[in-house]
Length: 176
Image (cartoon, rainbow, N blue to C red; front, side, top):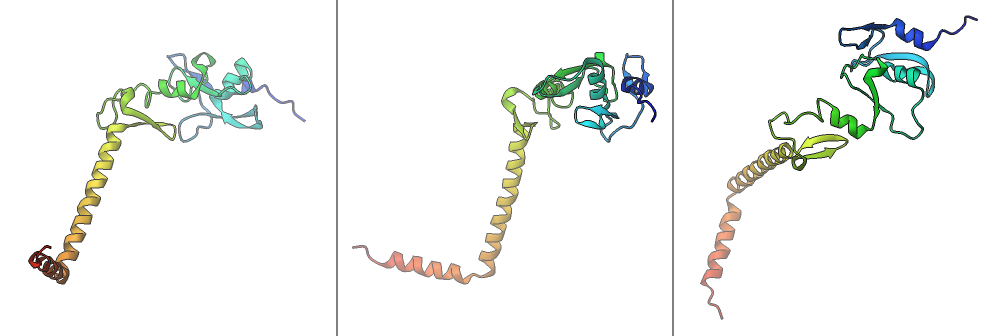
């Protein structure tokens, strides 16, 4: 049986260094651009993210029970340089994210201040956008409801006539 090759050497065979010092993984990538690497990792032999494998092979296992989130300091998904990787909490990683944490405005231009942001299923959402969406939905539903009432009212005028008769009869009765 052939001797197993060192996983670190196998990983480095699939790496090219760029001008920024990033070690760009040249192997298989997932749809988000993260490298996939097969080795005997934390869950046994299988594939794991290449940057997690690089961090593990360079620094050892993460402490047990620790939130195992490894952040790319360089913001390059394919980078496997252990110097560009740092263990952080998911909250810290979200705060550093260029799509969520570092943005100062939402896609509609509202300021993403602490008062205007709330977490929804782990994602930051703009309260102003949420309010606008609810207002638009309510207005559409309200207009539709009023249009239906008007259509129902004018399609059968008999209930109106009956109501008018009852009203006039009540007006004529003396109080007492």
